[in-house]
Length: 297
Image (tube, rainbow, N blue to C red):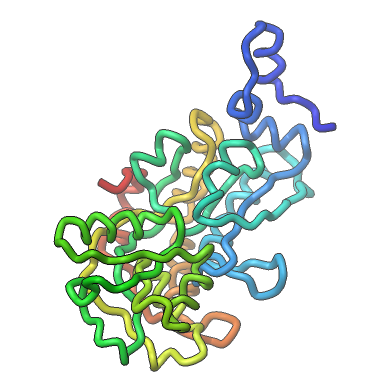
């Protein structure tokens, strides 16, 4: 049985109710008492986090996660700290973090004010916008071409919510079908169950680059909304957020962050050596200097 963190012991002694959020409020204490940090990964979020082998994820966000884990090891003076990895989806990533199932998520999660009521976000580490991936043969070029057609996305994503609102505002009567993850949503397009996939542009570039026939696919449509990605930690845990932000700040100041960006967005990546050829956006360049954790509007 795992020992209860000091903060939880104090709550019990005071006769206060002890819920999951109280028990895991102080992440560093939880990690120290268990000698384990548990981090999440996404299985098909190229180039942020994706599987090369069962339970072995790689990517830009995975490298950021490992840098943060190294900082935790140094802070706690536990060089052999165990790291457990758990897969998450768009639907379960927030509930699993809040419940204490894992401690840190660096993936492809948009920093929004609504989500900020449940979790806390780090300094923003990427900026993306919703676009469409479709077969070149589909004839889809922009959102008006989606009238009364079926579009795929992932359950619980901001993209689905954004496009649903756009559809209502413009009387497009778009129908939606959800995949359990990015790869599953992509298959809905490849199998003609949907005419397009609505996701953040960078995810679409990654899915296309690693598909069986990239030349048959294209990414179309105006950018609907620029949204920041950030790492997630539990809410009201200022100490752990400070550690995460401190690590990201160090990487940004040293130039290591830019090197990692070039590695995953402007160079051949495994498994097939695909290159997204995606230069750093002006918004991300600006935030390397500003280091803001401001959510999407």
